[in-house]
Image: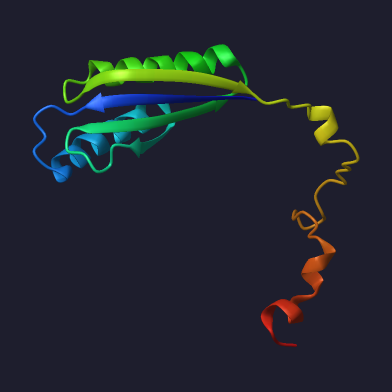
Length: 133
């Protein structure tokens, strides 16, 4: 699994208050989430009227795809005329994932007759969890 993180520092032109800046930042965040299906958060500059730092994250199976998605998202912010990108940085982290090791010892007996999967035996102790017998 590959996890990518990017920081984008923006300057919101013409903002005269935190409320105006927040409106622009929220608009950019919403557009990024909708268009690129990534996580976005304001991670810096919360107390300033015209500066904000956005944190963008994406995850996927291939580093080229994650990097491409985040680069396109940064370019998208640059193309917005509501804010100017002052600086950006992007990093990728590859996490090891071995499917065979994850499934080792796992046995799937299939669905039960009623179509429901078996519950763990701990669920049979309902009186202790609900406080009644």
